[in-house]
Image (cartoon, rainbow, N blue to C red; front, side):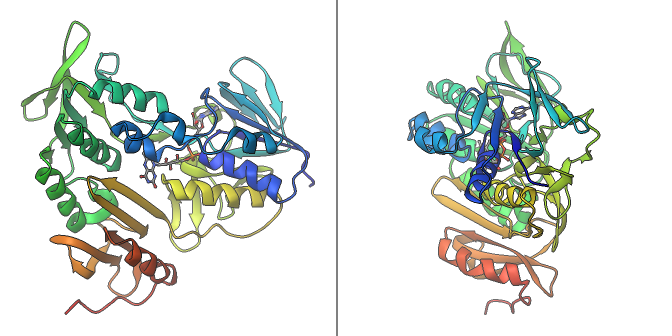
Length: 393
Ligand SMILES: Cc1cc2nc3c(=O)[nH]c(=O)nc-3n(C[C@H](O)[C@H](O)[C@H](O)COP(=O)(O)OP(=O)(O)OC[C@H]3O[C@@H](n4cnc5c(N)ncnc54)[C@H](O)[C@@H]3O)c2cc1C
């Protein structure tokens, strides 16, 4: 079918890339981009790094200049929330009752911050997903308060690093044994733990949070499962995220951990999904949903091409990076504690190093610690599922 009207829901990395790809590949019809934030598309990784530290003015996070967005010839419905999708009528309904009809739809609504079942109304309790939240947290960190971070995934760990740099007292709490252990496996996560301890973070791993304490509507601390009370002026809840699929609940589209797509990022005829919200079948790794920046761009391209009629499976080498203190960690492929791990350059105990993950026969993932060049060299080995390397002598 020739497309004449495409609607993109989600005006961020994946949605913008999908819109640009559609135009680049010749789609000349009506293009509408719907986003519930009032801002033009901006980048999220700097929010927990350069924006939070104050090193960047907020304007720098813009993904494109205004002229580049104008050149797309799209209708931007910003500050407008998609509330429902009628698949049979091919219409997206907005919160204000307006309807956006389509014959091609890109779902790129990302994720929202997961919250604790309590405490979020208290002053001093923050989450971090968007620019406004980053600016609010930045302002609150200005007085060098005591900060308790609930959740030591990459977001919690990055904020801990920035807050230490700003002179805050920081406690990082997580029920798992080490920061980022899910993403990096125990050997590398232990090194991350040491990095934070060395920088003065009070690390409480293997510890659950039982509640928040308050006075006059403001948070005063965090109560741990073992009864300990951690006094705090500020609390950041960084306990992961939830795919933004509420607006699709009654659509009949397949939902699970996100919007369920096939290997082409196709959800249903004329409907594709991309970015953090999309769970697709990777030809090599099986079903996955990736919450990382590079994937949002790559999948935005792939999903747009599928909408235009291409049939190429989306088979990226997943990639993410994180910056903490003076350390850049980069990871490709499948990493994490369930896989085997072997250091191939340096030592995971000190200094820069590189390591691979796998099943003892094939390499399925790689990580580097302040070794960007090694990261580039290891990427093809992950892509090819190269044979498991011999131990370093
Ligand atoms: C603080 C922070 C730091 C990060 N750092 C890194 C990093 O160092 N490395 C890395 O690889 N990744 C990082 N990421 C992850 C990366 O930013 C995401 O993977 C990327 O933003 C995903 O893009 P997306 O377009 O899929 O989703 P999003 O960026 O989440 O965009 C989805 C958009 O859709 C909007 N939306 C949702 N529901 C609706 C609706 N119903 N109607 C209209 N609009 C809607 C949302 O408001 C949002 O604007 C970070 C993320 C955050 C929050």
